[in-house]
Length: 290
Image 1 (spheres, helix red, strand yellow):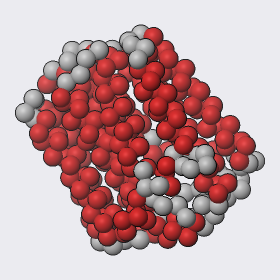
Image 2 (cartoon, helix red, strand yellow):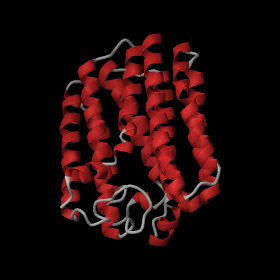
Image 3 (spheres, helix red, strand yellow):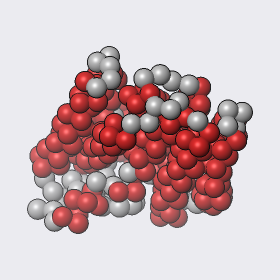
């Protein structure tokens, strides 16, 4: 039976900025529209964290029972390393999904019930990323899902439940955060190309190859900073997002230097930190410019 520290590691804390960042930016956009509601922001954060941890456990379970994680390079996987049973990890995943669903229903009740559709889609997408008989994460669609749910849906949903309207700066922020979140997944899958190829996991990195994956990573990061600069047309305060640029450049240099395997592990941490710092800067900028 896994101990507490192993369960925490299995939750993949380094990925949590992908849940926090969209809520920050969405809340900043709500502030720009003079619609900030602190308790709704906290509920949105709870939904994001619950879904992120849930999808991490779900991926651990699904990849583990398929044998994908047996010879991987990187942090602990509970099922793959056999420190926890598949049933226990699956239960943990659905418990997190349940928490996220309850918090999401509360948010819908205080804003608009049509958001239940987006919430239900997020839950389905979280499970079938690597779960089920034909997981879309094994069909090079993982980045599309991350962009949609941890970019567009998370940012715009957070803005709407607070301000009950949207603005083009929120859309720009959603695309930017989705792009960095995608870059994080690209880096992860770039590292895992050797093992994923052997086990039949056809991620986008496996399909397009290492060289194009490195180019895609750099392009996604660049897009986020271009959008921050364009958002300055609404308020120059959005340029605060550029405080994350040195962190981003450091990670991009590693990726484009043909680093492989363990050498790419720091990039995951660096990209997650880039996303979080970028989100803080952009959120503060939007709030100040409102």
